[in-house]
Length: 180
Image (tube, rainbow, N blue to C red):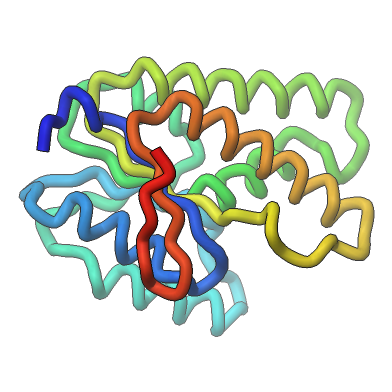
């Protein structure tokens, strides 16, 4: 595989579609990988803790886990390949941190700036980057305004990251299809 041409890869899919496993397989030959876990750590959510445990157990011990939402810092520094899992949880945390849900003044501007910064870092990273995100455009329309807002923001983020990617995959029922 020519890493120069396929340096940035986005893997999309629905919940439990196999997108994370597929993304991990794309980097299986790399001895070292920076695995960026963007999801919040579980407090008292046993189901979320079990999901995290499955992901941790699947990863090679030589991969380093970074639990952060500071994707710009990770993508901007040199190092081994990066696996970002996932942009969906990154966006959820950034929307929280930006004050979108509490209508804080300037929240939309902070969110837009964070998305712009990540898309720019993604496109400009000199590292090999594989990112995972939920494809939300084909699902049920959320019943709440906040659900629709999140779906819309994630759709825009996915489209922008896909545009800045060399390869884009869609995983459905465990079957990857190359979109680009």
